[in-house]
Length: 158
Image 1 (tube, rainbow, N blue to C red):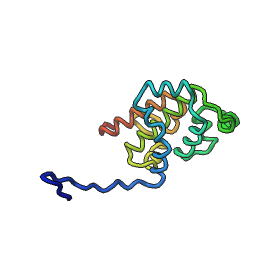
Image 2: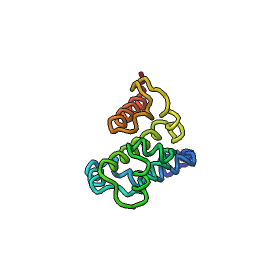
Image 3: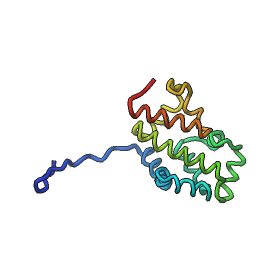
């Protein structure tokens, strides 16, 4: 403990995050302001995210382009075209990516690390009666997973 005048403050140790979790948090950082402001999120979706967002998802989720194409409901050639052209993404794809970034941010918060969250995704969850990984391809599925993460945060598990 460190005493300062009449008050005592506790020097807390910085939490130890894995390198992968730190990298994921760094990649998500530019999108974070959009998680708390619906207007900013809406404006970013209407404008269209940069194609780099697809690469960020691939990096954060640790998936292949084939897996990313499946999650985003695209063909692989279309996914590669988006990445190669450098043009802003359409509104549907931008919204899907933002929801996924928000989900991964929430998952890391709930489980404490990217690795733990990713370990949870491919297993049947009785609270949602589904494998969370199988729900990433729709906004409804992503919302189901977010709701389950909130229930886990509050200790309400099925």
